[in-house]
Amino acid sequence: MHPMLKNWRIRVLIAAVVLAAGVILVKGIQLGVDFSGGTVLVFMLDRPLSQEEMQQVVQIISKRVDGTGLSSVVVRGWGDQYIVVELSTTDPEEIEYIKETVLRQGIFEVVVDGNVVLTGDEIIGVKPAKYSPLTEGVRWELPFTLSPEGVKNFYTGIKGKCTPEGKCKYSFMYIDRPVGSTILIPKKVAEEENYLPSVPVLSDDRLIPLEEFIKNAGVRAYIVDGNFDPGVLLGSSGEVILHPELNYLVPFLKENNIPYKVVSPERGQSWV
View 1 (cartoon, one colour):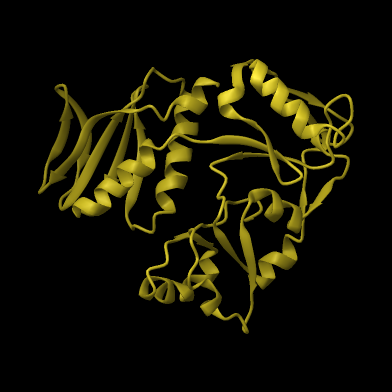
View 2: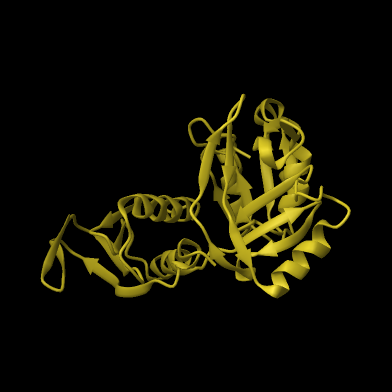
């Protein structure tokens, strides 16, 4: 697997430093963190990262901790080998939850027709990504080498579903696919994103139906309008993922001890 997909083997350098006030020091080097009544976690990566890689790691970790529902969580890089997570909480359970969230290794999967045809563990080598212009858009390539078992599984998974060149009508790549979760989509968002753009060279179609994304993600989904009954969520075994517009459902989820995550849309990207 590519090192960027394995970088969750992060060693905890300082595992919960509760501050009354002051500045954190690591091996005598000042981090410049200065606030009171909070907690700072400092993680040391397996290797130094480039500036671009560090930005990617910070972005990935930020997305993870943003979904925990805890407020005032700040993630930033320090130097080329440290990640600093600043929390407003001093609750031991919440701190441990954040640590587990950060340290969890990402799971990479390729899904075709609802079935996993390749996992990150079956990738043994990755070459640099390539981009080349097309008449409309760009061609994106990420060459990788599979293990013998990965070749067998990939061939079995796409047999009869893809062209000899490996082009499939619908193929999806996921990191941390929310299998077993329930997604609540506001009706307006569902209407706006009923068809989502594809990567041109991966699909024969330029637009992919929303139901295809849902089917391949392995989740349940509800379109929420004024008639939505939150009672259907009782007994849910997985996490409930909801749009910020549906924050009014959070008290119900808390009252019934249903795990949930509020995911904010990113500028220029589809929410689903």
